[in-house]
Length: 143
Image 1: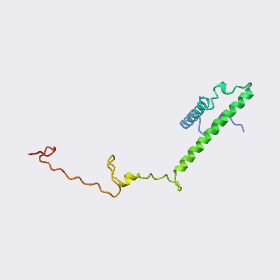
Image 2: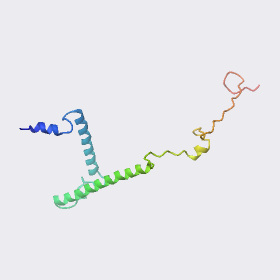
Image 3: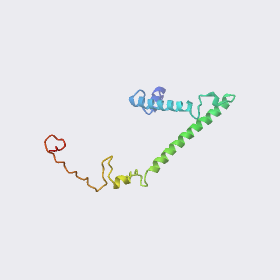
Image 4: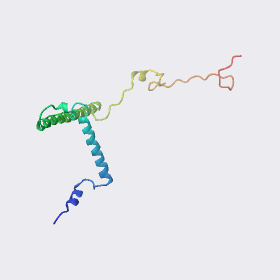
């Protein structure tokens, strides 16, 4: 029983070559790796594109320096991910629900003229209507 290597490679992929799903997945993957390459090479902490970051002689020594720089980049990314996770978890209550925003004291106890809001349970006062002398809608005329 012989297997055609081209057919075997096609069926081994998660998505069939050339389909919409394959294209979306590989476009996202390509964008992700290009972004990572840009971050590592850019003028940030690692700057592996700059030869001045690895002033050593020989390919072996340069490879060790580049490996250390990439390891540092990965550790910084992992630490940032964990830090973000800790911050999100700290904002949640014990039962996992997001905290309920507290109403400020001035909004709980006093009338806020800026937002024209009143504390809970306080009815908005009714303004007495002005007496109007005519149908113009303007202020009452003095006679």
